[in-house]
Length: 264
Image 1: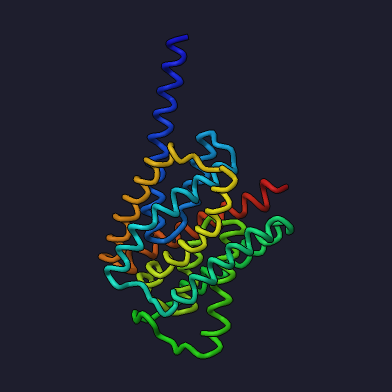
Image 2: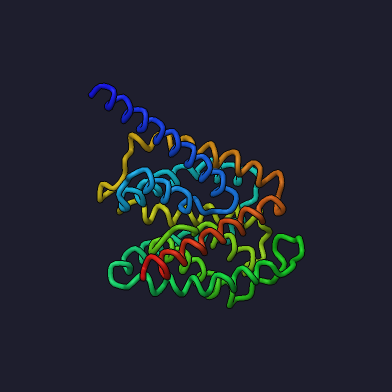
């Protein structure tokens, strides 16, 4: 019995170490191109956590873990505040509405729509662009209708489903608002933080978070965010592109599996 208990304890320690490593990798990737949930949620489920706990734990780790990245981007003045100041409340509200709507609608319908639309977004993002941060005039239509709609919809997606929200935000800021990838990555962190808060609160109320086990994972995620954001600021667009496209491709595959294979 003692030997069996010792082996189980060893497996538990190894599992926690692997989850800490996964949290560091997720934080690093998230600070560069978004997509922490694509790493953390499967890792938590594979570790044996129930799906609801896995989702709640991902919000716990990701929400707090992204703070160092936001701080670094603020210090480097890469955040475009004129978009953030009105985009953050819309992302927060969108996440709240998305979480409510998920109780009434079949998420597979929206998921399948996203699967079909994502390749279009990827093709748009590959079209060559100039190096300037902002290259097109912000017309009244864009400022008061198009941009708010985008912020709300992506926030809605975060509350409705979640994984890959950061990558989608960066893609939208880069392709539609014509930001550089560094500005897009920096500014998206504020939007994603707001939408995470919108989903974070219900999970806390429902008791779907393991705070004690989550502490080392939060620290690892913060360290990954800190290092990743520094590398993003230092190396710019060339560093972000492969990570961003890789995460979006991973999101694309995960959505296909969830809604077209697993759902059958």
